[in-house]
Image 1 (tube, rainbow, N blue to C red):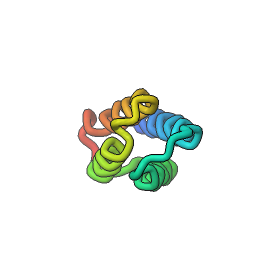
Image 2: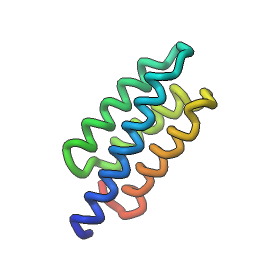
Image 3: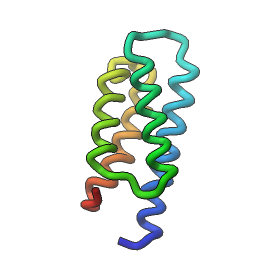
Length: 95
């Protein structure tokens, strides 16, 4: 895979994670698993900052995020964007 393709996938992931982190921070309602979502989003951000992340680890974080905030409808678009960004890594067979 060309470095530019890899860079693009990482950039998309970084953007989606940053957006969802902002949305979660601005969400006024507390819910039980908010801390889990915040921790996993921080982990995803760190992975994206460190270069090409491992697909299994991305998927694990996505699963935890979806489980933690998947039922919060105001955040569903952001979760979907993160899922789509993670799926870009699986489609290209890395990790």
